[in-house]
Image 1 (spheres, helix red, strand yellow):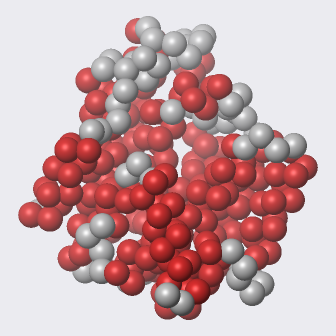
Image 2 (cartoon, rainbow, N blue to C red):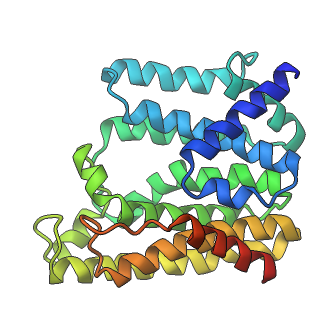
Amino acid sequence: MSTVEQAYAEVQRVTRARAKNFAYGIMVLPRPKRRAIAAVYAFAREVDDIADGDAPLEEKRELLEALRAALDDPPQTAMQIALSDAREHFAIPHDALSALVDGGLQDLVKTRYESFDQLRGYCEKVAGAVGVACVAVYGSDDVERAQTLGIALQLINIMRDVDEDQSLGRVYLPQDELDRFGVQQLAPGPEWRELMAFQAARARAHLDEGLHLLDSLDRRSAVCVSTFAGLYRGQLDRMEGNGFDVFTASCRLSTPAKLAVVARALVR
């Protein structure tokens, strides 16, 4: 097995082990696209792991900047080798990958967002950029819809992970909306449910707009994107069904439920 083949095997292993939804979407792609998307995921995963890790702040900053610099240097690690090869074959934009690093750096210094405009800017970096990177692999130039879809998925992540993020000292829900709905603390209650219903409506609007991306995709890429969207929509449905109790009730889908989403995407 060549070095490049070994690198792709590693990023696919990381994707299967770490990606809760990504792995189910990309399983329907042809091998070259599947491997390229796995390389993008592995890069984004490394950014997240550094930003969320236990290293001192300055060390995190140095590690993230080293990831950015490596985009222009000869690849060394398995992730870098796979991503470099994927970029050669699919013209994955450098700016999108660099934006992911910017998002990781932002997580080191910013833990609150005053408004949705501020939050959207963050989501464009950490999730919209993933959409832009991936759409080059899918073979579409609808960058705007790809970014919107990425933002939609991140908004659902934010709702789902409120408790986990709070443990890291981060609150992504806009502060002005917490005030508007009278939410004094992140905990179940009528005000909380109203706030989260508002967040859910926004996420669904972004999801619906982003899914117009399907019109520009080949069938297998469209199935992949439909699967991503279906998995996240399923989590959102579960949150709503649980009265937005994201603190004690799991909204994650079981393996059979995820496979059912894939099947529905295949027959759409």
